[in-house]
Length: 373
Image 1 (cartoon, rainbow, N blue to C red):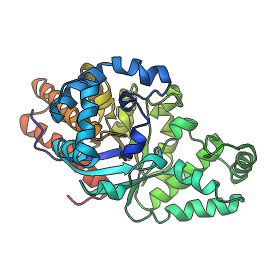
Image 2 (cartoon, one colour; image 1 turned 45 degrees about the horizontal axis):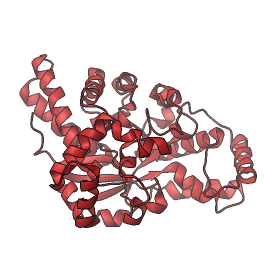
Image 3 (cartoon, rainbow, N blue to C red; image 1 turned 90 degrees about the vertical axis):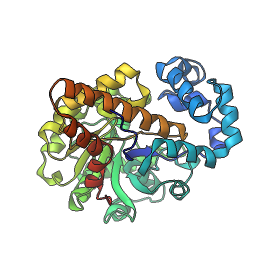
Image 4 (cartoon, helix red, strand yellow; image 1 turned 120 degrees about the horizontal axis):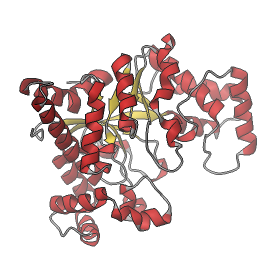
């Protein structure tokens, strides 16, 4: 199936780097979740994704398929023209931006608005870190944290949590007193700048506060699940750990969005979406970072059980605009191949496949986030 004509809503992505910040990174750093020097300077260039991507980027930019030629062509084009080319080729209708990643080095959301409509995803841990650094008392911290998200700020269509990175998805009820103790322990023991929130008790407490507010406003909450950079304990990033929260009636009106196909926990994520009405999924990062066979397998496993009304497209693009293009290209291609196989298997017919493709690429996100269709 050729899905290139269907505009996509990128339901989870990140701001692009400022050009001067990009110059501090090897090009291959945008294609790996690792950050060790041996990874970004050597091994990242030997993934199947990187080899494939160089050829595709070179074809788009009309240059030789080498890193040196691509970097030269990027400098010739400049960041604005490069972004316009990538976004046009990606046929992106709207982007939902999480601007809490390397926040000091990124271009603002307003800059991205020059190319495509943008909505903001508010990263909860980033918000908490900023407030903690400004206050000395727990009561003031909690009051400011809640006030910052209730009601959600103008332009914010979802919250986002990276608890999977910091302490894991086994999020448990925490007493006010325990959270207070953890706050002061963090304040007294943390001397690094910028502050990094990694205390499990305090993170759990804040996530539950945010979920109550999200439920109050019928707001989706995106959760990092599955693979990521080395900060993450992969075992604790399995979305099945969220079951306690999914069973809690207080959070029934908060929509849980499990990001990145939960790779390698695709079947677990699909099962959760199958049995819980307020669980949704996307397949960004797994697509386009896996091999072609891996991408196909991941989306196939998601669709073994996941209702097609609950699966969404995203790129998880970050750092460079090329990742927006690659995510969109492979998102459509892999989805089309999997749907064709489903037609051959008699799971669906041609008309249903077309409707499913439109739902996954844009309509499900429109409905979930209350975007204009």
